[in-house]
Amino acid sequence: MLQVKAAYPVVPYLTKFLSDCYHVFDTAETDELDRFLNKYRNSKYGPVAKYIKTLTDDYEAVRNSLLYPGISNGPLEGHNSRIKFKHRRSAGKAGLDLLNAYFVLSEYSFEELYYFTYHRLPV
Image (cartoon, rainbow, N blue to C red; front, top):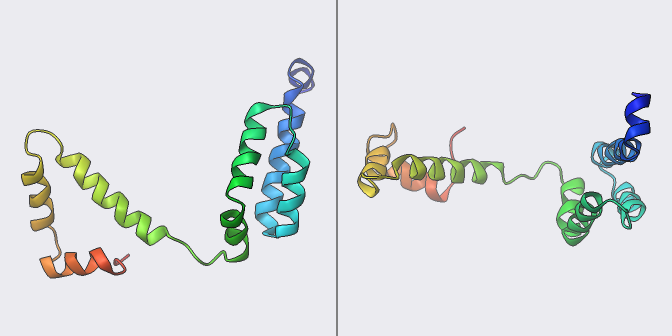
């Protein structure tokens, strides 16, 4: 490991950066987030600086994810993923006919599928 650190001086820097990043999200404290952003804001390494800039641009969303860990858009993203998967699977010669068949031959009735489109999906 010492040889790697000697050959690539960026390794200790990135190790510390990742350790600090994990610390921020493990503690879920906004003060830690602010210290982390200020510490690496002017990084000489482009990808690190870009990551910090992205976090800074989306500061409110990142801060809210730390303050409210129980709120998630996971169910909605799962629904979108299922629709996209079915759409991708039906692409080609059959197109919309095959996509329609996937929904018609589904284990759910039309009314249930319609309900799931606008309400919480079963898990």
